[in-house]
Amino acid sequence: MNVKTLGQMAIWISAWAAVVLPAAAAWADPAPQPLIKRLDGPTRAKVLAALAGLVILGFGMVALAWLGARMTQRYRNSKPYHRPTPRPGEHDWAKKPLDESGD
Image (cartoon, rainbow, N blue to C red):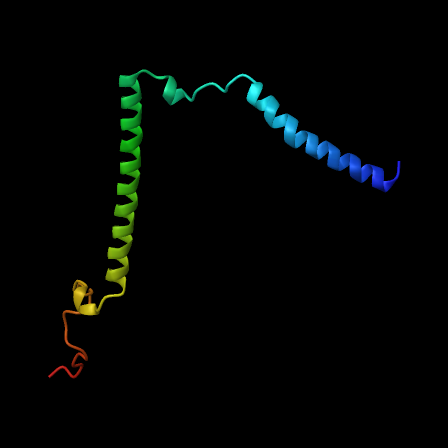
């Protein structure tokens, strides 16, 4: 076989696949319905409500994490007068320098 014949054969096979395979897929058995469609009405409502609750809970957790990070960042970047006063140390009760003269 030469290159021209191989090229024509490849074109013919791809054209055949483009026409025959979709037709064969259309004649095949239909795909089974998703699980949510196979449930009865009350059970489907419970499952969808539980999924909606999980989505809302997830958004709430993201929002709380975002707010906590924002508050932490604002505290770290704030002025010193917004921070609590540091407690005095062990030796801060006396004035410096101490008088060593013994008068």
